[in-house]
Length: 161
Image (tube, rainbow, N blue to C red; front, side, top):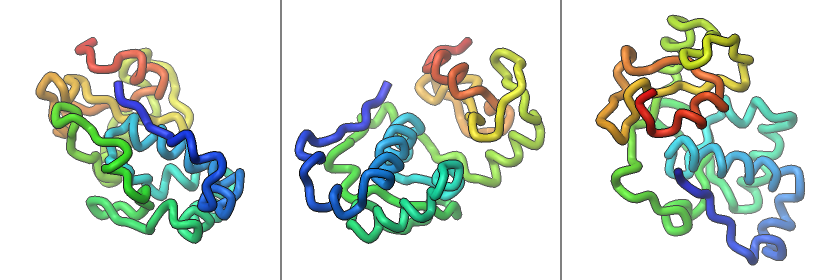
């Protein structure tokens, strides 16, 4: 399990005040997502747009100096300022990013059916699960990927079923 670190001085920092409370809400959930997905501070555009006024709040974070516009393996999005210094990951947690095209291939193949519980997955709850987790040598080969509810994927964690 990884953690998204938040400095205890965040509440009074000028960048926090400049961004505003709604944008800081996006900053918080995006930090949690980026940490959970081991993205090294990258936040994909598709994730931001699942939140009301997401792009507006992302622009406020850029203006405040908390994010920069970024691209990762062809996916557009944003990058947290100074992520690596604040949220370093041990090498055993590093994994390859799953590009949007690969995510779309898996969703197209599996439909919106969770490979873990076989229930229907709502659009914003879609996770891509590694059948054999990366920590056990699993890869981003499409045969090792399946659609999952976020709660099912998080409950499974690094276990092989």
